[in-house]
Length: 144
Image (cartoon, rainbow, N blue to C red; front, side, top):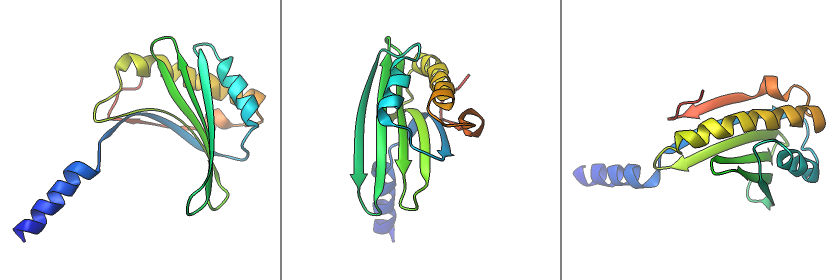
C-alpha cells in the first residue's frame, strides 16, 4: 500500500505541470479564411508579427488553425480555430506558461490586443456576436 501511494504521488508531481495564463474562448459558426485572419491579426495595433500553421489528423480527427502573434517586447498570443470530430468549431486566444505565470506586463499588454483582434474578427471576418460569446478564464493570474 505504501509503495502504491509513493507511485501515485510521484505521478501526480511529475505528470501535470501547472499552467498559468489567460484563455478567451467561444464556439463559432465558421472558420474564416486563414489568409484573412492572418491579415486581421497583423494589422491590429500592438501586433508586429504573425506566424501561421495548420494541422489535420489525430484520433478522433481534428483540424486546427494556429496563429501565433507578437508585438513589441510584451505582446504574446496564440489564436486558434479548432474543428473537432463532431464538426464543432472552437475559437480561442491564449497566453499561457507552464510552471510559473507569464510576467504580469505580458498579460497587461496582450489582453487588450486580444480584445481588439476579436472586434476586428467580428466585423471583418463574418463572425457576428463573437465578442459577446467569448468567455475569459484567468488561470492563476490577474486579468485587469
